[in-house]
Amino acid sequence: MSRKRVAVLISGRGSNMTALIEAAKADDYPAEIVLVVSNRPDASGIARAREAGIATAIVDHTSFGEDRAAFEGALDAELRAHRIDLVCLAGFMRLLTPSFVTRWSGRLLNIHPALLPQFKGLHTHRRAIEAGVKRHGATVHFVVPEMDSGPIVVQEAVPVLEGDTEETLAARVLEVEHRIYPQALRLVAEGRASLAAGEPS
Figure 1 (tube, helix red, strand yellow):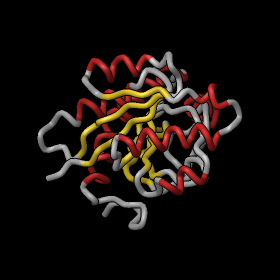
Figure 2 (cartoon, rainbow, N blue to C red; figure 1 turned 90 degrees about the vertical axis):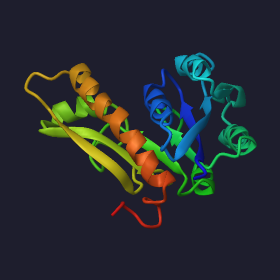
Figure 3 (cartoon, helix red, strand yellow; figure 1 turned 45 degrees about the vertical axis):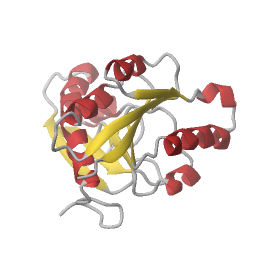
Figure 4 (cartoon, rainbow, N blue to C red; figure 1 turned 120 degrees about the horizontal axis):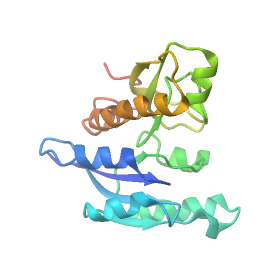
C-alpha cells in the first residue's frame, strides 16, 4: 500500500496536527505526514513537528503584504516540492482564495469546531452557547471556495451542558476534533470519501 503524502497547515500550537501525526504512526494508516507548514514563524506547532522528525516550512504571509496570490504561490510551490497528495488545514488562520482551493480541489481538508452547516466562521463555541443549542461538535469537510461549506467527511456531536463556558465547551469539542480528523484523513486517503462522491457511504 503506497501511503498518501500529507501536508498539515497550521498557524498556532497545532494540536490537531499532533493528533494526525500520532495516528499516522500506525503501520496500517494509509497516509503519512511528511510536511508541516505555518504562515507564522512563531507557531509552536512547528517545534512539535520538528521533534517528530517531520519536515517543516514557514511561508510568512506578512512578507507578501496584501498579495495573496504571491503568498499562495509560495505555499503551493512548497507543497509541490514535497510531492504532496493531500493537505489538512489544522488551525490555519488564512482564508484561501478560490484559485488555490480549486487547484487542490478534492485534496484539501479542514476541521471546523461546530456541526456544520451551523456556526460557520469564528467564535463557534460562544455562538453555540448564546444560541442555546443542546448539541455542538466538530466537522471535517472538503474545502470549497465558499468558507466552511464543502461536503462533510466526518462529524461528531457533544452535548452542551448547563453552565458550560466557551472554554469548557471548547475543551470537549477539541477531544472530538482529535478523534475525527485522523478518521476523516483515513477515509480520504483510502479513497472511501471523495469530493465528487460527497459523503462516505
